[in-house]
Image (cartoon, rainbow, N blue to C red; front, side, top):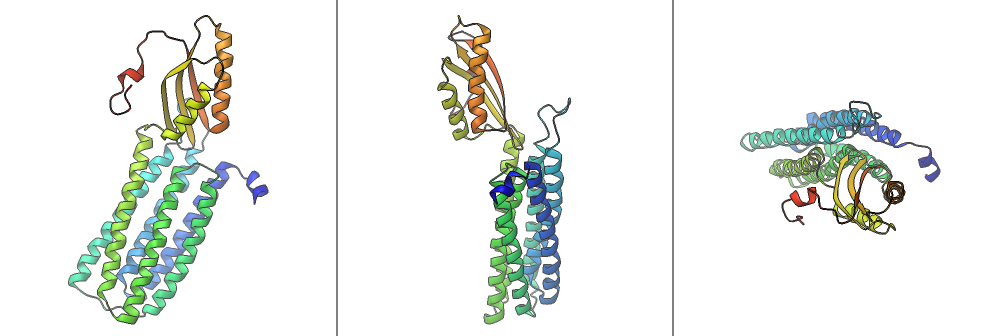
Amino acid sequence: MKSLSKNISESQYKFIAASASITTALLLTIIKAGAAFVTGSLAILSSMADSLADVLSSVITFIAVTYSEKPLTCDHRYGYGKAEAVSALIQAAFISGSACFILYDAVYRFFHPVVLERTFAGICVMLVSMLLTFALIVLQKYIIRRVQSQAIEADHSHYVIDLAANTTVLLSLAVVYWLKWEWFDILAAVLISCYLLVTALKIAEKALAEITDKEVDAKIKADIVREIMKTDGIMGYHDLRSRLSGSRLFLEIHLEFAGDLPLSTTHEIAERAEQKITALYPNAQIIIHQDPYGIEEKRIDNDISGPCAL
């Protein structure tokens, strides 16, 4: 597997993940639609609606990861990585929509009960659905360990929830089949809907963080500062800023040097610091400004408000 992974590029990994997601979602939608028609189960119908939303969101993911891999252009010098965050945001909207649809149908079924039929056939269908979903999750997890893609991570999170939802549907069908508790089908649908809404909120929150240029995790910044301060010749730093755009990490930082050093020397020292950072984060693109140590100037750090203010 290691030798195979060396021959596959990051964009190819993303293509494989997106294609597998679309194929799986289509299969799940078809078999769940048949099961919902045969059994009349609202829980299966809710799972089918979620899978249908998966088809649409997976297509969007495919488009987004393809678009985000476009090379830099003169009018997009930061690249197209944020297309993945937009994709994740659209996925959150689809998930929320399907959850609301299921909740509405659950309320309707509460006042207009439906007797379920052929629940054993539904149980078999859900077992097949769980196996397909689990196989996709394993593939996505493998790819996520090798590439950074918010769109694929959002897709992966969704299918993990799907697996839990399918388990709930399976439990619901088993209860109806053996205990004849028809109301349990409605309860399962409501629980799945609430779970989907929470998931959509988390995906949307992460996507909006990238779109609004939220700083990277504190650990990443700590790693960067550690490598900078370990570099001989650097006396300090200020105005460190960071943001993510797809798989790219953008950094801006002012490094401080002894005022009597020539520009060529400070440039060489800054280059060594940059190489240390890119060794840790290969997708980092770094802009470094060189300042004399101790100079008085207007700094972004002094304008920051909140708990991280200096």
